[in-house]
Length: 196
Image (cartoon, rainbow, N blue to C red; front, side, top):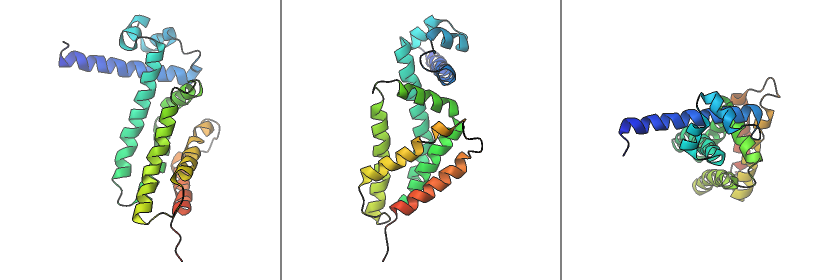
């Protein structure tokens, strides 16, 4: 049985390897991100990667899990801390854009993997829509939001957020903080309950 210290060291090594893998995938694409190339970036042998992840598919799954967990860890506390669904929806949108701003390499790697995954990560996309729906249901229950199909609106919100990464590196003056605020303003107006 490994000691606590060994467990910490192994966790740190796994984190280092997933970071290196994300960097290589973001830089050269999934197809060219070989185990050898990732090992070279990490300064280890391919055998070390195999020991921790089994194979390239295991490493790719770890990159996706790591990125998804980092995003949730950053965004969820901001959303649930809000005093209203309107503010919760704003936090959801702006924190998504903030994650993109802070973690562009992870984001590019995730998109590259999703683009080539043949549906393996479709569940994550479905979960992202469900998470938006939860906030929309919250707003409908409190009377802040109007009567609309939450799946349609949640899918529209996710599509608007997910369109941003394609602009990274191509739009010179893209200010993700300002973009997130404008997007939040747009969906605040779209979801607001009409008053007569």
